[in-house]
Length: 190
Ligand code: AMP
Image (tube, rainbow, N blue to C red; front, top):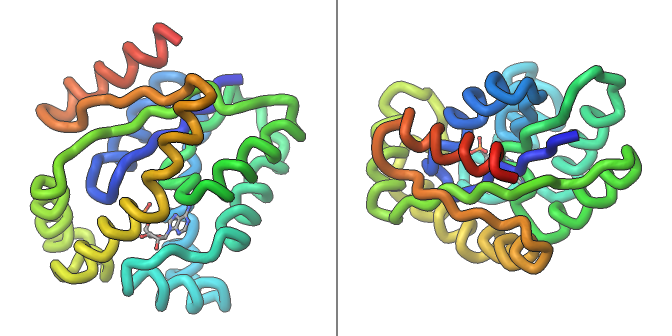
């Protein structure tokens, strides 16, 4: 199985690139952000809890997102693997993912980290906010908080994968197709 972790700060382009990579390598795309937004749209109890947290730019508790991923991995699928987009976002989530995949006799193959400067992230998110309808893209203060939360709680994951020899930084700027090519090349050379 190929299991890709697509990593990077908010606005790095994970969602866009995950769709291309899933298609190219025939992988199931799992985005915890999308799963949470589905809960919000369906107005479930979990959705109501998530909505409040997401609109502040904070992270949803580990147990919630880990359970979501666990239930997706449990479903029998004939797939060559998964692409994890926006998960893991904390070191305990990364550890939980390793454990879950171990249960399925599998492991994370590679962590692809999209690198984009803070100014460009803010610019991209503010632009996306004009059309995305996402409350967490709507104002500069929430965006700033999301980037701070990333630096504080999510970026330490880099060391976690680096110590396993799985961390691959990828330049996340320039034309979208060029970024896709860089990602594809890294996966193909794995
Ligand atoms: P995303 O679509 O990946 O940008 O996620 C949108 C928001 O959902 C994030 O800012 C978090 O509030 C929440 N979220 C998504 N994935 C996770 C995760 N793995 N852990 C905690 N919160 C998450």
